Length: 257
Image 1 (cartoon, rainbow, N blue to C red):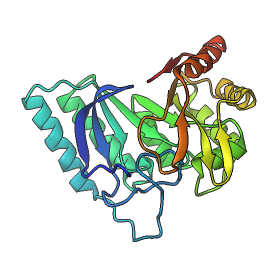
Image 2 (image 1 turned 90 degrees about the vertical axis):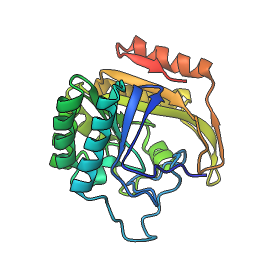
Image 3 (image 1 turned 30 degrees about the horizontal axis):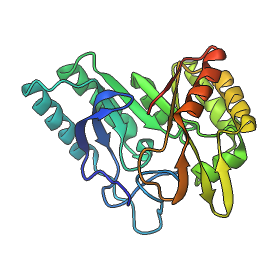
Image 4 (image 1 turned 60 degrees about the vertical axis):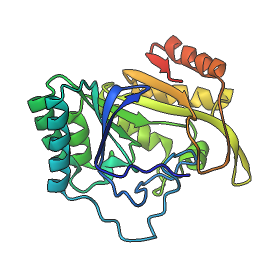
C-alpha cells in the first residue's frame, strides 16, 4: 500500500537520519509526482499519465510552513531539521527556488540554527535554479543507488535516460558539500534478479563515490512496503561491510537501520 502525505507540512517525526524532523511536501496529495520510478518507493509507482499535475501554489505553501513554524515556536516544540521530502521529487515543483528562499527566511525567524535538508534524486541537477536552491540548504542529500547504468535503470527506472556519469558529473558540482544516500536491496522484478550489493556493483559504486567526494554516505535498506513485491532487505552485517569499504576509501559513512 502506497504511503502518501496528506498535506504540505508534517511532523515533527523521529527520523533515522535527521532527528526530530519537520517535513515539507511540495507535491500533490492524491498521487506521487516523480521523475524516477523506483521499485522500492514507499509512495508507490510513478504514473504521471493519470491526470494533470496540480501543484500547491507558492502562497499556500509558504503560509502552511509559517503556520507550522509559528505553532511549534509558541508551543516550544524542539526540532532538529526541516526536511524537504514528501510525495515524490521536491525539485520538480516549478517554484522550488522561491519556496526554499522563503523557507530559509522563516527558519531564520523562528528556528535559527536548525538545519534545512533537501532529499533529491539528483535528476534535475542540469537546472540552474534547482542547483541554486540546493545550495541554500544546509544539507543536500542526493540519491545514488547503483554504480552501473544497468542497475540504475532497473532500480530507479528514471523517466529520462541519463547515464551514471551524468549524475556523477553533476554531483561533483557541489565540491564535496553533498551527502549521498544509498538503499541496498535484493529481489526479483520484471523477470530479473536485482542485487546492488554484489562485489562488482559495489566496486563501481565506490568509484562513483570517489569521484563525487561527498561529505558523508548514508547507507540503509528497506523499511516499508515496496511497490515491487519480491524485494528483500539486506542484512545489517552486509550493510556494515559495505560501510567499512566506504570508510576505507576515506569517506564518512553510516548505516541507518
